[in-house]
Amino acid sequence: MRWHKRLLVAGVAGVLVLTASACAGGQVRGAGGTPSPQASGGTPAAQANDRTFVYAPNQDVVTDWDPATSYSNEIIALSNIYEGLTRYDSGTKEATPRLATEWTSSDDGKEWTFKLRQGVKFHSGATMDAEAVKKAVERTIEKKGGAAYIWDPVDEIEAVDAGTVKFTLKYAAPLDLVASSGYAAWIYDVDAVDTDGKKTAGTGPYTVDSWQKGKETELTLKAFEGYWGGWKPEQYKKVAFRVTPEITTAWQLLQSGEVSFVDRLNPQLFAQAGTTETVQTAQSPSFQNLLVLFNTADGPAKDVKVRQALQLAIDYDGLAASLDGAGSKASGLVPQGLLGHAAGMEPKQDLARAQALLAEAGYGPDNPELKLSLTYGIGDEDQKLLVTLLSSALKQLNVTLEAKPMNWSAQWDLGKKGGQDIFVMYWYPDYPDAYSWFLNVFKSADKPQFNLSYLDDGEIDAAIDKLPELTATDKLAASQQYAELQNKIIQEQAAVAVPYVQTYQRALSSDVRGYADNPAYPNVVFFYDLTRAG
Image (cartoon, rainbow, N blue to C red; front, side, top):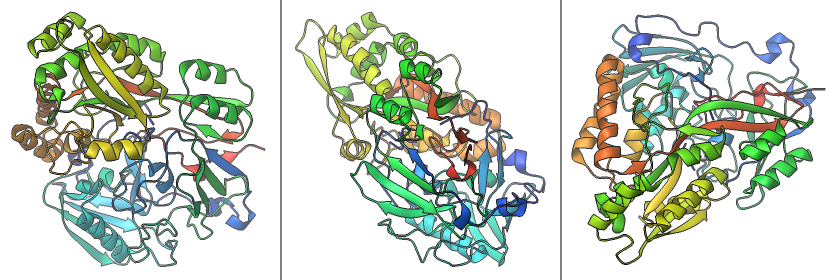
């Protein structure tokens, strides 16, 4: 779904985009690193409890095991297996130390030097040092998969010494934020990568215990005994991912104590969870929005009038009301709180105008029935609600929506082949920046990955290419560029409708302590940060 993409697709309010200019000036960031649990009296992993934390996602977990190319739902697992140089902190709105303990940037933002944490081992037993960092990032760049584009500014990587790595950039970029990305920023042992998931090559607190694709309990993780942070008795040493497509089933399992965490409930069940003694809830706004992508390349939706009619047929207000706090109306492609958010672009339903546009395209009540195919995520009640409301509205216009709920991997495979008129998915940024919506979803591509509207516009492509450097050097110009692009993509091309931005409503066992959403890592639970009461 990249949890739709970006999974199930998590959030915390008020995240600001930090540009290279804000991080420049030779300031040291994150000096001192993060104290390890063992430094504070922790005990070895062998003494940790064996209680299993059970996550109940509604979709298959792993689509790609390679840390260089992974770009989908597996973020919820791999974020606990791999680590980056930095991690984004939603509270301070800055990158914080992880495998790097501190870093400096030149005044022009084109040179970044990271000091590495000492004594860190990969799951393979190899030492994490500057040469290993260099090799990992270079391999990710060479693979050109997933979110490897985040390293596009990099011109050269130098292992200055075992504990120091220096990046020289082609143009200014916020490399401390880039290094905190939930995709493509992981540091790994390049000689131990196993794309079949039988072993792992990270430095994180967990490794794979078992993986059985297609099974209900698809994936289990176990503690990495040699983790640099050490272990405390109250931490979770085992983790299981139990795929549960139906929300009601997930809720029953949570109540019975068979699962520990449900990433999403419908409004009625979430309200019930708030009054259930054995359950606790968490709610926070996110950077994840729902995209309704229209096929601009083939089929009836190739006509821009049809696409505009589809935009106008969506009952945005009714959908927001029905979500009952689980989402809010979107304004443009970029959620509020990120550079590039466009105020005043909230869409509205207008069936009369939609009917007029369909008539101009040769469809509508006085013309032959129009049939359109749509795919969406199975088990996602919010997407199902959108489809139900849209189907009802289109029926009034003599348009039949043939909607099919699908597992993400199957839906995505079909989408990459151009196999539907409308593709529904979530999106969220790779790091706290709006660029990924435009580069990944709307820049033309010979072989579509997430450009599932199949938009092909040279003028839009050229404008997208200017975004990173503008963001680092001239935020006002970048904001204007984002606004112009959203007008072209949404208004002129009608390639997409953006109904709402999600508000995350989580439910978890009452004995879990330390849980917090982080918008930079959607739907990720950092299990190592959790403890069990009692």
